[in-house]
Length: 566
Image (cartoon, rainbow, N blue to C red; front, side):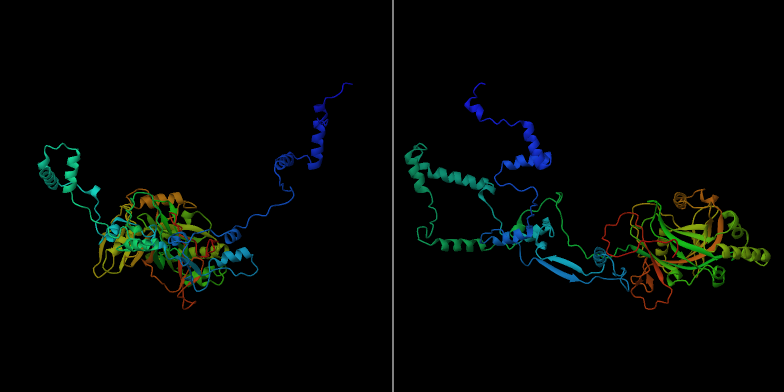
């Protein structure tokens, strides 16, 4: 066997497969651990794979390592002012008699914290010096001119324009001085001596060679700099262009519950030619342009006590909130396209809607004595349906009021008005009648749709008498059909003429809502201050569904569990 050389004796005879097997047995065969082993082998201080590294406490690090700031006259510009931030706790305003939040009880801690966010006082952070910045106090051109009043105007040699007359005088003077040495060439030694003798001496610098300590010189220079200095030096910087994108900071207001322009609607009476069964009504606002329903339904009951007795077997003790006949609607985006839609319902009964509504279109109040037997028969049938199906409803009729027509007409009159709204079968348009000392008629002026501002706060209260309703066609009036009918009400159209009218009389009072109405309930039935007596018939605030987004924080706890009937 041949003898191995010296360098070959130092080479390891370990096979690569044996090395891989050894490493795999030690680290479980994980290629990631093997990779970490190779990376860690290159460093002197390795971290064990099973030991977790504690993260750095950032707050503690800032406390133990404060920023190094050299003491000097500009230190105040670097450090944060210690008295800049001021925290004030302001009590939260509550419109209702009691807080509308659930009782804490055994709820989760996170839920309790969320509930407290609706009841705790406001913590207002005031920054005293932010108002001095351009973000809160923009440096406009007008403020620049105001600040520059009284400042001396500084004129530099580079900014001066040479005066032709003075320049010519200087040239003539120079010629007179050089008259005696015309034969002396310019640039020669003799000419320089002559110019030096005729030049004016510069002003002497006093105390130029006097010895003075450096501190005294610095103090003297500082006094000179402070003399006649403007108190707002940085504010004298030219104002930025308004077209440039600059973030403007404004002090926010304390958050509060959002309320749009509020309208008070009082339901006074509802009468038909015949009275054989209970009729139930509801109000809601619709925006035709946005094609949205912008309020929840307000259900009200104007039936007599005798008629209500037909449902005695299906009605329990009525809550005080169900007796409301007045509603306050909130409209954030009032426009010419808002309609007040009134829908009527009756107790579910056998037969088609047309058959159920036929007696209201055939019988008249003047013929009650003549048709007494027929009316008694219809009343008996209605009592049977009320006993069997008193809990169920079916659509009956509907109508709508163009809200801005009422506002514009009432605002143009000198006193409270009474308007009678009816559908003219020939013209298909709305008409108005004012009952006053002199009876007269005039048609409502149609308003055109546009972006003009609409206000619901300045018109005079008006009493409306609606004398016509449209019979419900089909089992259900779809939203698409309703928007189409509402759009046709604003222009002459043959669509409405095809709808069969039902004669009735509904009286409403429409007026701007007072700022603090008495006996008012929120949409979640909380009593609004002031509420002196809980036994008085209340006024309901109707929850708004804005046609467009309203960017305000939700600061009030509200239960959004809506039911079909309150």
